Figure 1 (cartoon, rainbow, N blue to C red):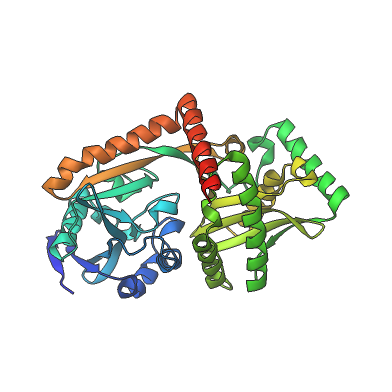
Figure 2 (figure 1 turned 180 degrees about the vertical axis):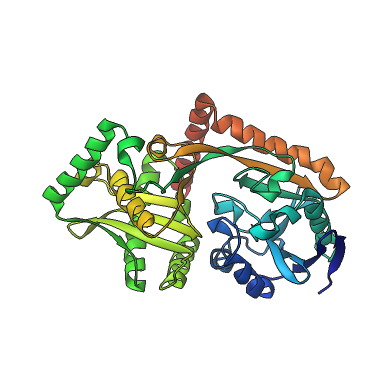
Length: 391
């Protein structure tokens, strides 16, 4: 493996590119333990994503490692595919994540300048991984905290909903929820107990519990998607195996990549939550709730109330409820603008970049314009129903 050395004022940065995850695993895990990253760039999550075959056989893997005097400083795991004839590098797992991220040691933040990253990106092609442009999606923070935002960027189609768990007494529902909502949650918990039995939040801690919680989740989500007229992407064997394998690989770990929680009432699962972890942060990727009589009692709200208190006790500082504008999220979190950045690496990439930026800009216009989004959802529902009839 070749290394491209670049002189720096305070040492020497080197750029190495691995053609497989395995080649970078030891460095990746070591940097992950002390670095800044989103939960979606955890090695366990990314490796299971690849093992599940989400990317198929298209494209190639290029894990870019930036080091200073042989000490790893940052890692960027990329999948390089073709788009309109251009070679486009995207963060592995971006298609199903809430945020892309560079994995970096905060001690070296000032070294990861726009110029240094540009030379690192150029090293991809220099080491046999031709790239015309890089596409980063849903970047969190600003140029001071996120090195990738040193490049030109624009708001992404969806907002990310982020909240804090720093309230000393727990989740402060006295200030984060309206009095009406607060009373509804309390009444919902009482009614669930009266009608079904004791209410409990359980975290899957055995392979058998993972399988049981997951089965209920997929049944509940399938029903919900049918009601919405949306294709159930989570119901595929690929997704089911992916979640099961990540959750099982996380059992017994202090920093699990994924956990599955279930809200039970009288022993029956009435809601679930799938969440990812990075140091100090929890990201809820997807949840589900039961229908029938229990559905009247704010199941997702009760689950969140108990889950966030558990996370606070465990020392978590922040959490997010994922991408997408849904009213229930505003009760617990704030809409946070996240950004897309399209970075040309070659002259051809410079020509193609405006097309990719335009596509993301159109998507944001549709998502953030209620009338247009209603039309888009209607078209999605028609296509989903047509697909069901075809099957």
